Amino acid sequence: MAVFLHKQKRLTSFQIIILGFAGVILTGAILLTFPFAAAGGQRTSFADALFTSTSAVCVTGLVIHDTATYWSAFGQVIIILLIQIGGMGVVTVAASFALLSGRKITLMQRSTMQEAIAAPKMGGIVRLTGFIIKVTLLIELLGALVMFPVFCKDFGVGKGIWMALFHSISAFCNAGFDLMGVSSPFSSLTGYVSHPVINLVIMLLIVTGGIGFLTWDDIRTNRLHLSKYRVQSKVILCTTAVLILFPALYFFFGEFGSLPLGERIWSSFFQSVTPRTAGFNTVDLTGISEAGQMLMIVLMLVGGSPGSTAGGMKTTTAAVLIAVASSVFSRKEYAHFFGRCIPDEAVKNAATILLMYIVLFLGGGMVISIAEDLPLVPCLFETASAIGTVGLSLGLTSELGTLSRIILIGLMFFGRVGGLTLIYAALSGMHKSATKFPHEKITVG
Image 1 (cartoon, rainbow, N blue to C red):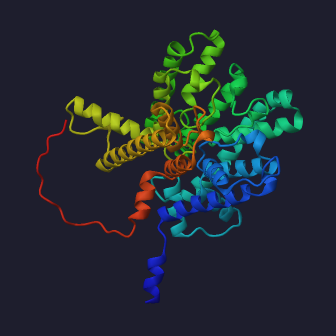
Image 2: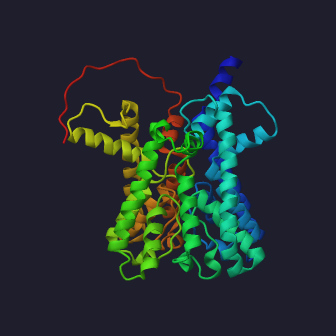
Image 3: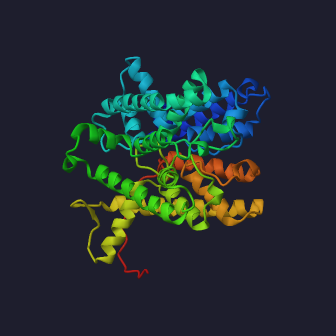
């Protein structure tokens, strides 16, 4: 009986991941309620602290209070630590402490680490986790070093170091939190709209964090021998390039025609990169047309890549759906990438993920629109930003009521943990049925 109870209480990898994120969010929220976490010394309400903590751990960037002016140095340190943990993954951070202490990693822990970073196999997972930790810290340090001279000139040496480090971590983790409110609250990076160093470094950090650690492992192992890359890495790199180039062309010709040429180029590329899923902006998003805002909504829903610091449906999900549609149009039996067929399981998962995101994104936006008596498009922009863990906003977040904030918290958590992870965790006790029903044709379309 005791053995049976022990087995019943054993958590699955998916449940551990969910509880890990929830635990870090709750801890962060409690720390942010302390009076010395706020710049004014006031006690922040638990609801506001929970929203901020969720946004940080889920690397979203939606904020109720301006990060630079509302939170004290202690509060900002807590926020950036939550971002780092959320970006690398709770399980990865926990595994790093186990590795540093020399403890042996059990089979169950290896399985959880595999699920956390979406690794294709368990073999070599400890080595891969060590690689992730080293690469993350190295890239964030390099980003901070390159941006330091700029921030040092604008804010002084001490403040410049903190600004460079904070924005480097926030960008690589695709979080979108910034400290530019010292100039103008909620201004993000609009003060650096044409600055080449800040634009280039932030964009590179966003992309490197968003393509996934497995892709970087491929790049490290195979260098420029692209033919040796995993099919997934090839798909991620190609899809990422397309999702940067074509939206940038739209923004260049359709939105920013009134800007000077240099500023127009930087703005176009930056607003193409940041919706997936960083949350920084260098222009006023309310000045973009509804067509441009809808394009950004699509980019936010797609998000980054599997096993990365980014959220969203993921580039591979979009690529699989497009490949399946292409195979239907060309009347081919199977969808494929680079001479490899796409497994049926991947197609089913992609369709399921798309359905969940569309339902939650539209449903959340409609409820917020009704509850707040606001136009639908700005509300959809807000929910897409939350479920895609982006952090871009048209200025609604701080004005929303309790119900709307609860919806956004739920969407942020869903977007970071992943829909399939939540479903597998909830249905972990269910067993597969061996029963197969007879086939019958159903006409669709």
